[in-house]
Length: 65
Image (tube, rainbow, N blue to C red; front, side, top):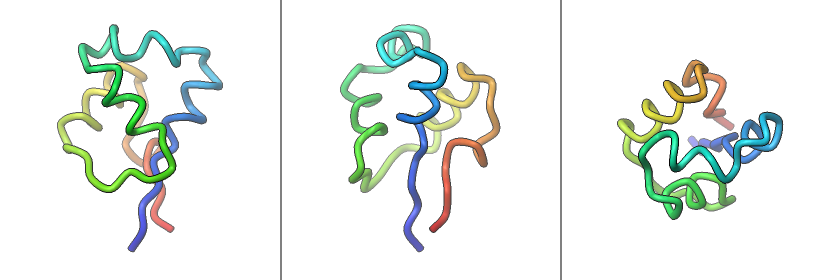
């Protein structure tokens, strides 16, 4: 069951691409990885942090294909 992460689109809509790592306390490489088309694994705690900072539900961030 493939899952896609829609972080790149969300950040583009909010014009936050360079700020999320700093605001969330995550490494810029982590954010870049989540924005790429080939995310193979991610920690749930990272997704929770991103959702909290962006004030969104996890259903808005991930999509099951």
